[in-house]
Length: 231
Image 1 (cartoon, rainbow, N blue to C red):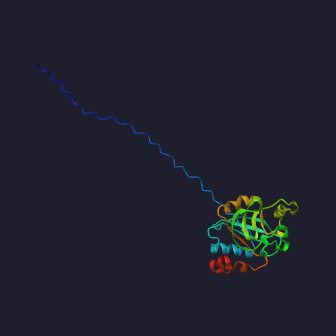
Image 2 (cartoon, helix red, strand yellow):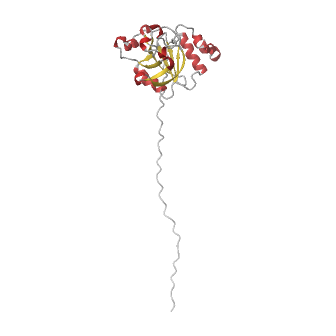
Image 3 (spheres, helix red, strand yellow):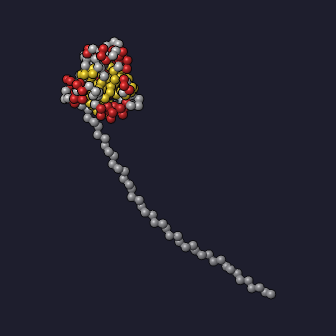
């Protein structure tokens, strides 16, 4: 039997074109405009305060720490970040006694045994950290040995009118404490605690009855570090 073979010949068939996916061009998303940070204008200060602040910035005396400059004569506090940028200024209450040194042994005395003349806020450069004081109150210790701290204004003794003294337009009535530095509660908790809370910082207190160069002798180097600021 003769078998009829039917051959199947493969005919090349061109593949059907695959439709291209539509590519939609994405519109470039513009980044939000950068918000310009407006620097806080620094207030007009006394010549001594201006010199000390200029020297700190020029000499980088604060290292990598935030710092505070207290002008006792003006009863004011200026707060700076570690890079020297100005944060703000606020009035303060200070020791009722006039002077730039603490009386020997004053830190070991009871409050009722400290006379008015001994209630001074000492001048100088202080390395500070937060700690606990009497009554478990959290304070920024400026001079622990002499019981000098910086803390929010005390309102327990109404007759002292400490809040009113802070709000008064002149520094004439800002001497009331035993030597500690009182600051308005909002400024203390919102700014000082934020900057000094982790590692502390430096507090510089200007003298009021002693020449600036006696307490801060290196201020004399300012003309060599920054001639423009010195002038």
